[in-house]
Image (tube, rainbow, N blue to C red; front, side, top):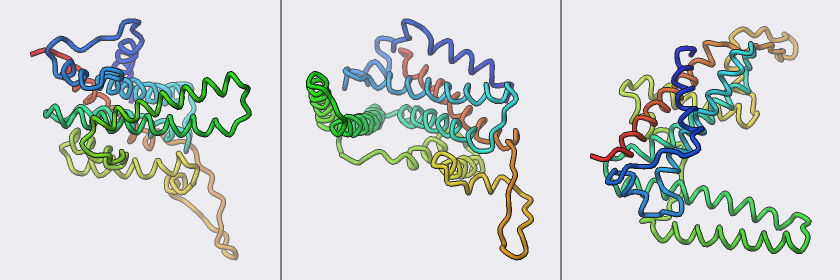
Length: 251
């Protein structure tokens, strides 16, 4: 894991630039971005990469502070896996229309979730000016949703599990690595939703009470268990940044 830190810091410097790199004129992303310039496809991919790197650095910071968490570490790593996978999934196709349609599908999901959030605010006690602002924001989101929908071939919603499966297939040639990455995604869902079964799986020695059959499990964070999703997410992220540069460079 420590061998990845220099690369993570390099991506952090790229993310922190006041004037982010723009796709070169004539590049694939330059063409893709013209479909919906209000939220360029390249910017959606960049945001996914930046978010994934942030989650990995959070995991790194906990490790270097001497804190290995048996569950919380995996919620951060799940965010890294999702962000890196989304970026790879959007950029993977060499076909322009496929890239654009994937980007629009992710944008549709973003606007839909944003709309739900603003809709929930309608039940909150607001003053008159706040109600006006909220109505304007809801109208803005609805307009963006309609604009994206008009550009899509289908209105199929984003399936994150399918997205991650496709990103793993694109990134890893080895079938065992693809399968391991998918199982990590499913397992870390338990951590994200505080369901507990993933933590129990990471403990291998249990002595239940004979009468009740119940047991108290004491578990500590384990570096080797953390390393699996950490490196999987890192490799996806590295592939994503490579694709980003490829799609941003002119012929």
